[in-house]
Image 1 (tube, rainbow, N blue to C red):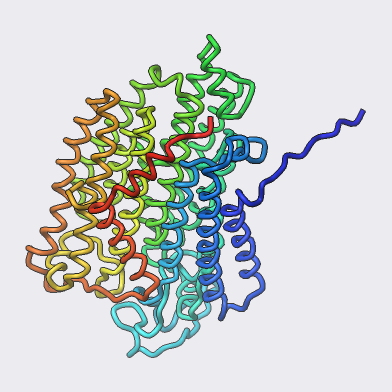
Image 2 (image 1 turned 90 degrees about the vertical axis):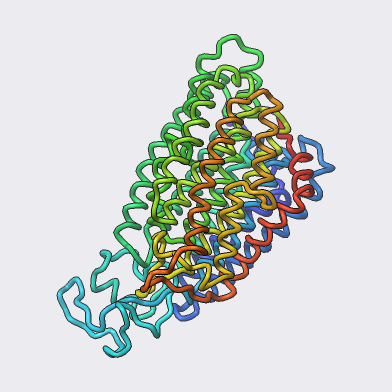
Length: 551
């Protein structure tokens, strides 16, 4: 007997922001196959930016119309995708920082091709790759601009084939379709209505990032090490998440977050539900970078190409928090009391350990990586407080941190040593602010925002999260958070003191002037960080109004 299956109806209009990103990613793959290498860079960069802008416009229309729609209308693809306030807000944050990151990936004024004039291929053949000896300065060719990515990711780092590809001007334009696929996965991750779709989104956003982390032009071995660590630990976390999904199905007979929550509300047996929450939380806490599951963050952020680091520190964290908030508020709110000791332990450990580790760092990029982990702890203070006020405050915090983190990592890329490499050693930054006041002032603003100093977005974000947690009775978390913020101010201010009050070294780094592809995103990031510190109410009202999941 043949059984007819009713295909779910698909609302293409409400799915259009994600469909645009995924569609442009597919077109971008075709561009890699059919467009000539000489035009591929311009086509890919323009196509990617245009696709993200189009997705932002579509998201604006969807968000405007969604306010008048019923919950059933905003439940799409048989409940697999939900169009609600938190999901749309996270998608907006992801698209905003992803647009800046994609533009940053196209930057070609900060780096230079580095290669000897004559190289030996893997076959042992000596070939000349252009340029005279007088053109080579401090290990790189001053006449050949390049982006942050290796010209040949499939070759052995430092091999003759890789160096020849660099001197030939090859570009790894595959980073654009990979980035778009990851961004599409991030947009879906925070809007999933069931655990299977959430797992698929997790893999879609993660797999391209594993590849992107290993494509740095400089410090190739460090970059490949970062990629391998991220991949191996990410594979474990995905497996744990999927195992938790199986227990959630065993507890409720469904993969829907709403059905899981309803079963735990009415059922007496919660053992499978508790196990499911533990395992799923581990997978999501890995993605946000919480202690002890975020041990990969410092090494990966330091080794990955800086544009990829800026994307991961901002967009990926926003998407992961969107998924974590949805799981806690929709699927497992009835287990809040049972899970509170474990979640409090993770939150406190994240704030304390990351802050202590950041104090000991002498590398600015690695310090910012540990700072990123500490901010995960601050955001978790709101995320594990299951109230509407805490949900709105956490969304505000995630948005502010994503914007500031992107700007800080982008600013880091303009500081270069004599060989053209990024200079992240704190001792080398001595006097940088006096020699380059604009860069010093912008970096200082970002650091002050991370520290939670008034008149910056970071201060308002921390105040909102701690206030919401305090009103819910989570005063121990608030006290630990305030103390860790005070300690964190030390290593942020230490960088500012070095930039403006320390004597510069004789061979100090220089600040290169990037193209508008980098300067405009940095300016927007700095401007929004300052704006949200002086006039935050509009965004606070927005996050408060939309702080309701479709249950």
